[in-house]
Structures are given as C-alpha cells and as structure tokens.
Length: 232
Image (cartoon, rainbow, N blue to C red; front, side, top):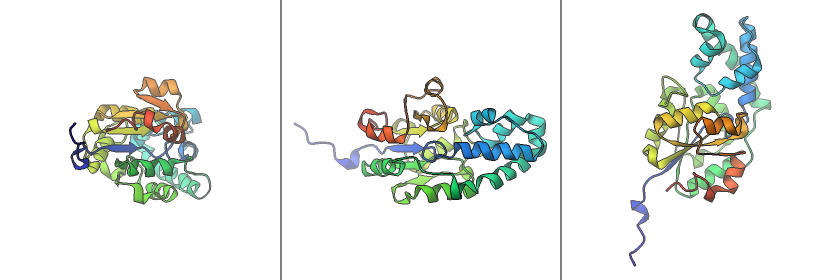
C-alpha cells in the first residue's frame, strides 16, 4: 500500500459565490430601487421585467429595459438614483440567508479558497460584507473594479479565479441568476444554482446549472453529495 498523497501536493480548489440573491436576500431591494430610479427619470418599468435583469451588468440592464437611446442619455442618472434608493435598504430590509456564513466557514475549514465573485460597486459591497461578517473565511473578494463588464461577461469569474490562484477545473461557483450561470459557463467553471434569487429551478438548469438547491442552507445540509462537496 502506498502512502496517502501529502496534503501539500493536493490541487488548490476554490468556491466562488455570488452575493446578491445567493448569500444575502437583496434582489427584491434592487428591484424596488431600480423601479423607483426609472420612475424618477420619467421612464417607469414593470417590476417583473426589472427582476429578470437583476444580476446583469448594469449598463446592459439599462439598455435592455430602457432601450439604447434612453440608456445612453439617462443611464448615469438612473444608476445614481438606484444607489440612492438601494443603500437605505441595508439598514432595514437586507438580511443574510440562513446558514450562509456557516457554509462559507465550513468550506474554508475543508481547505477551499472562498471568493466572493461579485461586480457590486464598492459602496454596496461594503454594506453586503458588513452584513455577512465572514472576513476570516474569505480568501478574496471581487468588485466592480475587477472587470470592465459584469455578468454575463465572464470577467468577474475569471478575476475571482485569478485571485484564488486556481484554474476553472478546480473551482465551482454558486449563484442565483441565469447571469451567474452564463458567466461561469463562459469561464469554464461549473455552477451550482440556488432558488433564493427568484429564478425557477427549470430556468437555472436551462441556463447551465449542474444542480439546483433551494438555498445555501440545503446545500450545506447535503454538502458531501453536492458538486461543491465533490470538488477536489
């Protein structure tokens, strides 16, 4: 019998997490903030349409919902109004999903490098990190500064891999939106879906999820049987 492979020779692995809608219940706060922002600039948009775009690069979201001409002329103002309406939610409406911090800590304990792979602006990211309060479990965090274009462009995922020092074959991403799945797929990273962002199981699977869980708590409960647990 040969000796077990030394731990030092084991491949480095990483688990990448979207934040909004995956770890923190914030998607509907974003819908509310965008809805108010669009009304502020005189171009109201139905909330169901906004919800479908949550998690998408903001410039692409604006073009999709307002059209290129309005997005070009009023997009910066809409973004400013969105931030003004969204940030107050951090004091009252946002909360961390059950057992999210426990999951991140467990993955770190198992030796995975945990990276928050988000394109959130720094001001919003500060609020989210304060809510999560898991700095000791994190290997790295991305933000809007790490890619010119957010999801579904793969730049944020590729940036997270670079910060973790791993290749796509040794990483798994966890996300709640089709844009997470598309970005991960384009970066060559397997992606696990959760339902907490409001996208259906069928929608996530169709977008490329290797499996879908109700939330991060159920993922933690079945960790050993999941794509995350099988990451070696």
